Image (tube, rainbow, N blue to C red; front, top):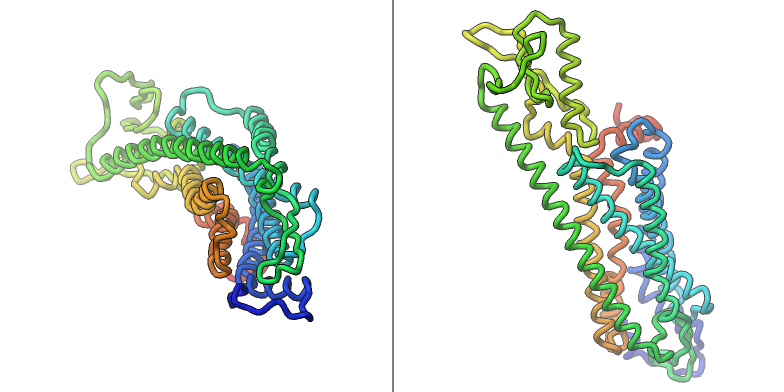
Length: 409
């Protein structure tokens, strides 16, 4: 129903009726937003609860996940809730201070999520590509989180000057006066500043996306190299891997300081093998869990099965398991970029065209609003990615939720 072509000038119509008609027209978008709200809040609450209170022994590589879950939940509550209220009261929204505050919180939560993903990318790069360099300590991570909150507030603070309650003549019924929450810079003489501000935000977003892409390129390159290396040694049988210039330990085990591969020619007990296995795992650990990542490989020589065990010769699948947390954060970042890109494109159009929204038909507005709010999908997808890539998270959920427990039996 195109409200432009509807006769709304009858004497019996009022602003409430017109508001209800427009809210009904936006109902499909409101339903989608309601799904975002419910799924996002429930999913991120579970993520926060499990990672914060049920997995305290494995917080190092998962340190940022509870914080990211809180930001995702806030984005769902504020973003979806605010958008639903705008859909329900498209021309009857009142409260200038409320409008400014919600716009600020909406953009603040988005910027926090973006900066957090940038911080996570830096942390992953240091762990995977620079494992022997200085790493971020828990205190440094906490300070970084506080810094992100403050910087995000500073970056989004100008929003309050460009948004607020707007009084206007209702479309299709010029004799009626409506009130909406939106960009008011056209009416306050701040349009030039709004254009500059949006341009700065778009530039910062581009720089952030480029930086994250470069960091994860090196992370992916390192993972690929290790996968290729381990796959080559797995598929290429050999008697031993004994570089000539490496010293030997008292037990006859070659030790290069890395304990990458051991060839035990003595009659050591299995406990010694386990100690060497643990040592090798600790060397290659990038703070991702090495759960089920090491499988002893028996070497056959002259048709007889030896007791020699080659440790840390990992297949492609095992290497991916080792780096699953890094791969998880890479995918989260990819989803964020894909879902935020439509909003970024619309923001650029807003800055370039002062009449962008007023020039759209009702159907075009409904479609544009869907893509403008599509970034919320990023906040509801993350819990599903955690479940797919982190077996510990899935196990904890099954332990504590009866319906999942019964399904797994």
